[in-house]
Length: 97
Image (cartoon, rainbow, N blue to C red):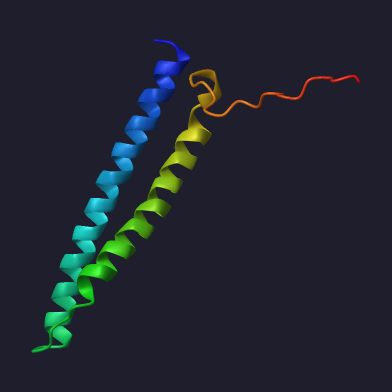
């Protein structure tokens, strides 16, 4: 496999990992907050649980993803295996009047 395929697989794998972590965080927060609301505030309608768990799940998954990627980058020299996503190119040419 060449560097471009490795980069594509890394990006797809990272995206899939981030989505799975986000879903797990959302479900976990939803269950914990529902349990806490039922225990500490009985008889109330906690309508804030779903939006809060969605937002907090996305934010927490971002921090978890970042920590995992930093650890992977420290342990493995990714520049050796991956192609850069963004390449700087000089589009200016010497124009002489």
